[in-house]
Image 1 (cartoon, rainbow, N blue to C red):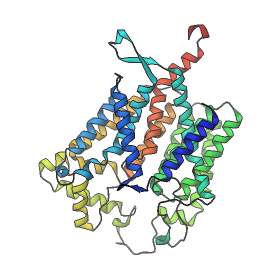
Image 2: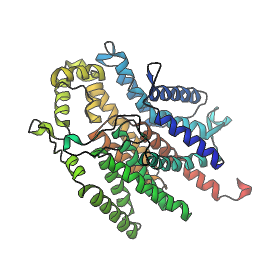
Image 3: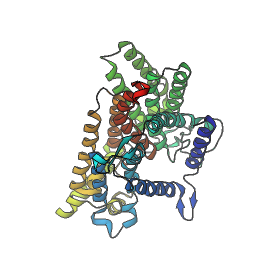
Length: 420
């Protein structure tokens, strides 16, 4: 694809993401285009017989279970809408898989199995382009473009600093997306042979890192540190020089961007100017209070309620009645338990373990370490935030596809031309 075509496509994507929060005919653009994407991919996938891995099947089972809850009759829309976010990983994975496997083989009873190597090359390149895109998307906002979403400040901490949101719908999406992009860019630079592209990846790494730090979101910082540590740990047995480089880079980022920032330290230790409870309920912006409330709610139900869960609508209403807040738990495991019950929590853990097992099948793959890094960042995100971020899960889908199919691409590219 010509450079001007790529620029046009990613420019259109920028415009789409920029206007995501706008409302048309009573519906947010973000919800509308993602719904259409999911429906389109589902239709595309259904046209071909491509075998899905176990984690994809489990994700669908978990999502179906998340609808079968106590509050489905009273709160049908609130119960069903979160499925769109949960579908991102499996549906994009299957969509990419269907796109790559293009020809049916008779010996496989018509199942599509022949890999299209030119398309796999395109998927690999677009993974790189996407993380570069996320980093460079910060620049227009630093140059004066105003986001369409409300920009938060640190007033409650005694500072006037604005929190960077950029192209994303909120500061948490910005922090998570840029943290994942930064870790990816640093990792991809290791394998880049062209010096100009390698330098571009390093520059984009610093852009994404600065953008992530400017959100002042602790979850994004945690994801960044976890991702960097995983990559660093993986290098210990292979390249001590790179370990020193990555360790030094992490120390510099934390020292300059966090420990020397009064604003960031106030965020980390929750030192607000507004008086709170003065006890454990203030920790983590009230996370302990939210967890306590939701756990008390689910375990006060009858056996049926504990088993199948209340759903996001009913659990939110009960929380509002108890503490005057209607928010999710800020913990994916607590959310799974409260909203989908013990059965849902079991399926969620089973789903996560199936992703880990899938990744471990491809030890030695060029993308193995980055995949483990993504998985650990995702677990960290679930422990302190929860839910699913569309762009992060989309990148994870690309990565899981590359993890499975790039060994075949490497083998194909190493074959003599007559054998291809």
